[in-house]
Structure formats: structure tokens, C-alpha cells
Amino acid sequence: MPKGNANHFTQGLMEELGLETVCDNAKCPNRMECYSQLTATFMILGNVCTRPCGFCAVGRGKPDELEPDEPQRVAEAAHRLGLRHVVITSVTRDDLPDGGAEHYYHCVTETRARTGATIEVLTPDFVDNYEALDRVIESAPEVFNHNVETVPRLYRKVRGPKSRYSWTLKMLSRIKQINPEIKTKSGLMLGLGETHEELFEVFADLRQHDVDFLTLGQYLQPGERYLPVERYIPPAEFILLGDVAKKMGFKKVASGPFVRSSYHARDMAEEDV
Image (cartoon, rainbow, N blue to C red; front, top):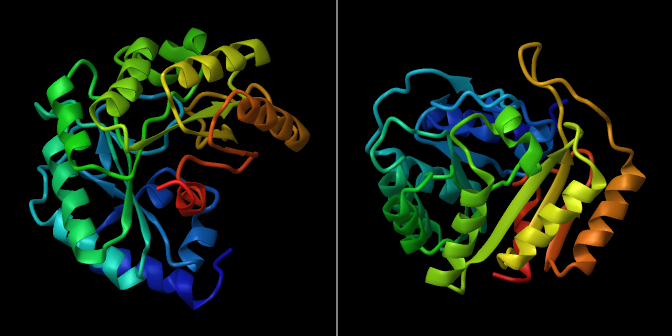
């Protein structure tokens, strides 16, 4: 339920500036809490995705043209919200030669210049497009997040035919190779049929590729045409998995049923950026 005037202010500001949030488009269960705390995860590059992922409620189809002034509007919203840590994500834009990387670059640099805030990006995978990935890295976000989402056995079923587990790992590793100062982050949805052994293997792969932060949350089916929930993980099990991940060397781990990749992102990044 809405939590007071701050929630309405945040929602109204997004509408006034013509901005999208992943909070609304992906039906995040935490959006009222975040809006009430004057925070939101900005979703750039439109609200239509070119990937038919089996878990995501964001609309799919043929996207609209890019809006050249969107970087300035994101920066203005972050300024008016008084944000100290800004999270910027997007739909996947396979229709663009650079996947929207140049647009990401300007959103990051404009927001930093306007607010002085630390920036976290949660990007698509830019599969095999090193030039696009490098352009986003060049904007030097304090945190670069790309979710592995699930275990390799379920990759095609969950993320579709274009995404590749091996590329995701390569991508996360390249960020640190180019700019070791950037903190890297990834997350998984639980309850899609994965086993603990498979999860531990993914944890190990992420650590081997020097990923700093990890999020673990419960997958919730956003509608009838999406993948079903195979299992609801008890809260105690999330605690157990989080403890295992911490022992494997992640600097920060957020593990719980309603944890999402950008939920309380500032708290996770604050001590390390």
C-alpha cells in the first residue's frame, strides 16, 4: 500500500518528467516502500524490450525511437529527489547497433554532473559487443550490475536463446579488467528449479570473475504467461545461502524473499564505493 506523501511525490515526479521506472514496469513488490523513501530505479531506452525473457513483466515488441533529452530528465529527477546513489537500468535494445550504450554513457555522466551522486548501472548483456560494453564502462559508474539471473542449466528457458552464461561471466570480468575501481554486482532469482549445488557453482564462478556484490531473491510469477514458480524458498534458507555466499568472499550479500537487484542498493554500495 502507498506510504504517505513521499510515495505520491516520487510517482508524480516520474510522470511529470516523462520517465520510466523498472519499479512499475517489472511490477516490483518493493516499489511502494522505495517510492516512499524518495528513491526509484530509472529505466532508460524506453519501456519496450526486444528480448522475450520468460520471467520479466516489462513489455516486449518493437521499441520507440530514443529520446535525446532523456539523460537530462533522469539527472533532473535525481536532483529533485536529492539522491546520493542513483540506479539506472534499461530494457534490452537489440535493435540498436550499440544496444543503447552511448545513451547509457550520457545518462551516467549527466546525472553525476547534476547531482554529484554515486551511480549504479544495471545493464543488458550487450552480447559479444565489446565496444558497447566498453563505452558504458568508460562512464565509470561506481557499481556495475549485470544479473546472471539463474543457473546455467536453466539459462535458455529463463533468459531466452540470445543470452549466454559464459558471456555474462566474461562481461563481469572485463569490467574489472578495464577499470578495477568499479565494483561489480550480480544477482539470481530463486525458485525456478535450481539446486543448491548449482547455486554454489554459480557463486564460485562469480567469485572467480571477481564479482563484489551478490543479491538473492525469490522469483515471483508476474502473470499467467510467464514461467511458473517451482518452489517458494523459506526465509531461513535464504539466510543459509547468504551465509555460504559471504564465506565464499563476496563483499556484500543481500539474500531474502523480496530482495531485488537494486533494492536498498545504496546501503549495499555505501561502505565500498
